[in-house]
Length: 358
Ligand code: IPM
Ligand code: MG
Image (cartoon, rainbow, N blue to C red; front, side, top):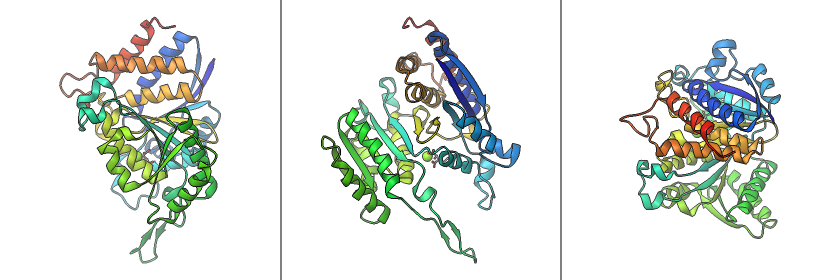
């Protein structure tokens, strides 16, 4: 099979972690006889520096013409403390999501047996915790208009907007996930306060009729934030709107023991994007210390979702388990005696090459 992949390293540690993911993708493809065609594109601060546009037309074209996008990270502190900055790197990510129609962000929250001791939660709470958070990605307060300031500059406003069709398509996808798993869906909202949340709830109640086997649990977001930490095993498929999903998945990543472990898939109308859920970690950029595993696991999701190649995905996950077991891990996991970013990538590629599985 020929895999046409757009590679968007982005900012900060993006280029380093993407390099490791590519080593892994190459190792799997060599093994299985797939051909790869990579096209690199600029995004984020790197693209602003080049052209002034954080998601240039050229990058969009590359994404549209590829079968999948492998994405590093976005963000640069040069822009963070300048509230008046005209363009921001993050706008590039949001524009990409909107233009590619990536309305569903799938974030599998998992635990790794060899990392249980790294979680700030008790072992009995974490062991076996595993759920899928499905975050709506192209609506809500991230995109609602009007947004801005009053003329005198003393008032600022954001608008949260959801149309029924936007809620329906993401929730159908969530119901479908639930049907393939434990037939249990938790819908998180703030229906006791927000009109958009009430529309979400109404829409889910209507859809539930089409999925009589799925048990739906409605939960307010403040309560969900508490329960994710108190008893993560109660969740199986969680669906929520854009901003709640952003916050809850950062929180959920803590269960795993390191933010550097969790991958994501963004799917929708055009090419799907695979990216770690963590940010660009600028303090570590260029130091060869960042954890590449979230990006490597995002590449595993890419094999599954974009190419329907499940054995390839499984091989990558096994390689990751092997590196964790061998203790070849970066400093976020093992502050003393840490491996470098590229050492972890080399080990994974080598493990895959030597694996007797195919
Ligand atoms: C994420 C990030 C982004 C978001 C930022 C970088 C705009 O936090 O992908 O979770 O808020 O969606
Ligand atoms: Mg986030």
